[in-house]
Image (cartoon, rainbow, N blue to C red; front, side, top):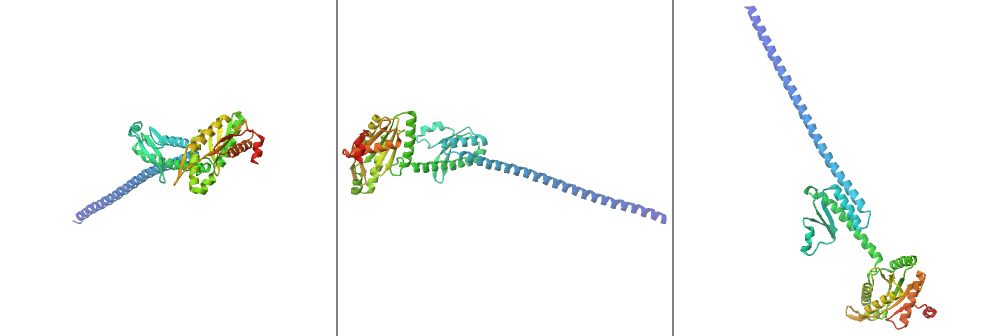
Length: 346
């Protein structure tokens, strides 16, 4: 009986040990599975983070390319103060960064709807900078995904275009008389020197007119300086309309005007001067409550007939103007070369 009990006890013991061993093994396997699962999750998280980093890297690279593209664009279009050159640089950058079929720069859109036929299928991007309307970009073939990039580049071009236009306005103010809209004396003399040197080099004709409004002081005294300013504006307008595009008209000072006539001999210059004189005489100038009939006296000198130096030509035109005043005003006088002419002014 004791032997039988021992056998049973041993069997129970072995079964218990086997059971507990199995439990331990199962727990170890479960712990190992959990470790493997955690490792898999960690690996999956690492893969996800890697993908996110790759996407972020790509995004940052795109942003960097965009920034460098904007830098290159601004660098190229700010090299010049010419609108056409700046637009060509802009187009090169547009074609480099996005797909586009065509892009044009127009100052203003057509007023007549029939004229829009040439822009069929195009889109319009208004170029504005600080409330200044600079023009329109007319384009087509830009995909929806590229519209934002196109808008950013176009806005940068608008800023550069505004800079160019402001520069031209400042440059124009520096060479344009604010009252008459003719050239200033300084710019007129610079052009006089250039054109005179060119005439001497080419041995071509060259003439110079000096004009003075008759009795201008009397106009100021009787009607006031505001009326006098209006007279100056109107005479400046007439002088400008009476000359060619290649001629250079300017305000010499006060009520005096000058006109540079390249490639024009003395006979032709006298005709131009007479045309100006007649236009001024025929014009009734309305200034506020006054309606004035005015006249102008003009002196003419030409190269090489009357002078071989710039200063001499200017002086002789002034002498001819003085003689026109002495002859009763409202006339055109060409320099005669008479020795008494200079003595007469002295």
